[in-house]
Length: 293
Image 1 (cartoon, helix red, strand yellow):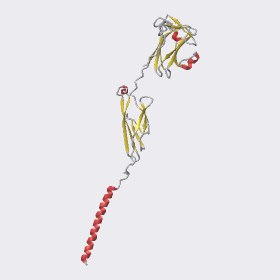
Image 2 (cartoon, one colour):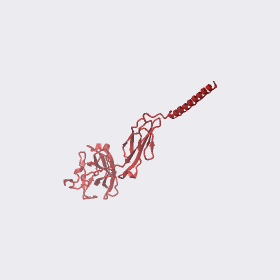
Image 3 (cartoon, helix red, strand yellow):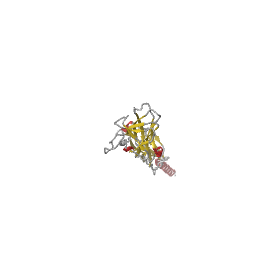
Image 4 (tube, helix red, strand yellow):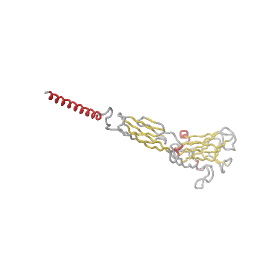
């Protein structure tokens, strides 16, 4: 009887120990199988993607954002500047290297992440180069020094290129002059007009140069205007004026004064030169238009 009891007790103890051992293995197994907090696999991880578009000048860029499954964005523009905007615009600072053949290289990096803090990054090199100035031809003025026989076909009286339908053409003088043998003369009554249309390049910078002198008395002046396009009457000149220069130096009527007038042609492929005077007899000579540096 006692032996049987001891045997049953031994079996019970063994079963209990095996049960504890199995439970320990199961608990250990469960410890490795259970996921930690926030460790659920991301079914749609973010993916960074972007493009860049140059703006109105070579230093300004707009960045398009084509990233997927992202909620937060960090842009690094490669020059020490950053942005968290979705599609930012960035203006770079001009560098001396922009004008070299290699240009200036910036590495643009977009880093995106989602609400699970999963990140994705994309980097691209952006090369900035200052565009070369377009070659602008020098405008041609007909009979610029008011000399005889200077038209392309070898004809002309020094005034033919300056005639118009809305005013009597100026006179010609042989003294005083600055260059050559002749200059344009405008009587004191202000009745004479010189006008010429000149072909130019749109939105180009130029410098108009000419020379003038005015009789010492009475008080007078001579005005040279650069007009946008062409005009059909003097009444249209004011509204068409890009820039005008009025000379009134009457200190010595035998000495010509040089005038330089910078201007931009704007949205015009044709500009006009208009010369008028008032009050005193005037002379003008040697017109030219140069492309501004």
